[in-house]
Length: 452
Image (cartoon, rainbow, N blue to C red; front, side, top):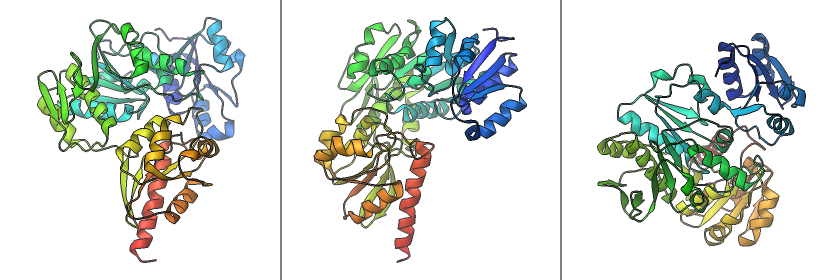
C-alpha cells in the first residue's frame, strides 16, 4: 500500500489513533483526524496533532471530511454504523481498522497468532505469549491490549512472533489480514451498544479466519453454538477444544488436558474455574501449532500467575472473602466468575449499559447469590431483570456499594465485584475501576487492623 501523498482520515484521537497518525506521517501520507469528543477533552492530543501539522476535526464527524478521504482508518470502538462512515462506504471509500493497516506493512513471513472471543482473550493471549517466551521466542503481545499493532509495524523484525488480542471492532475492519494461527474462544452477546445486532457482532469475530488458507490453523471452542454455525467456512486446519474426546482436537478429561500423545495435568496451575481450563486448552493448541515443546508448555502453565481484575482474591473482612473481577464487562463473563465460587455470594455489579440481556445470570443468581448490590447506569435495569431472582439493593457509587456490602456481610460470604457491564459510565477503564475497588477494600482492612 503506497501512502505517499494519500489522503488518510484517522477516526479517533485516542492512543491507537495517535500512533496511527505517527505511522502515516512517517510514510508521507496527508493526514486528517476526526474525533467525536469536544476539543477541551482532548487538549493533549490536539496539541500534538497541531505540532505535527495535522488537521483536527473535533466535537463530531462531518460527512465532507469523510467523503474527501482516500482511506479511512477507524480506531477501536468507533462504530461502522455512524452516518459519516456508512456514507463513505456507500461512496466506495476504503474503510479499515488500524490492525488491517498495520498488517499491510508487516513482513508476510512473520508468524502471527491472533486471539478473539467475548471472554478470556487477554488471559489466553498472554498465556500463549508466556509459553512462547519459555520456548526462547521474542514475542510481541498487543493490539487490543497494551501496544497497538501499528506502533511496531515499522519495527516488527525484532520479534520472532506476534501474538495479537483482537476485538470485534478491530476485526470488523479487516480485508486482507491473515493470521497463521487463529483462536476463537467463545461468542456471547456483547457490545450491542456498538454493533447494530448480535449477528453483526458474531460475524465480526468470525472474520479472524476469513483469509486463512489450508496452511494455517484455526482453534475454536467445539460446543459454542454460535461458532458452530461458521465452522464449515473455515479453510484452515481445525483444532476444536472442549470436554471429552473430539477427534483431532484437544480436550479436558475431568483431571487434565489431552492433546494427541501429550497430557497436561493441572496440578499447580493457578488459574481458577472451568472457563480458564478452556483458555488453557486454546493456549496449548496455539503454542503446539507454533512448534513449542510440551515440557516447556507444562512449565509455563504452572509459572503463569492470574492477571489482575480477573476473579482476583484481595483478602478477608469479618470472615468474608473479597474478589475483584472488574474485567468482567458482560453477563457471560460474570456468570463464569459466579460459577467459580461457592455460595453464599454477595455480588456487586453494574456499570455502563451495553444493551445486552442479563438473562444468563438468572439461574445462578437464584442458586448462589444471597444479595446483589447494584450500581451505575445499568442498576435500574438489572434490578428490574434480576431482582426477582434474589435480594437487590441499589448504590449511588462504588464507594456506596462497598459500604452497603459491609452492612450485610456475614462470615463465610464471598464478595464478588463482577460488574457484567463496561466501566465507562463512572471510570475510564475496567483497570481503574478494579484498582479503586481494591483500594476501598484494603483501606477497610487497614482500619480494622488498627482497631479503629
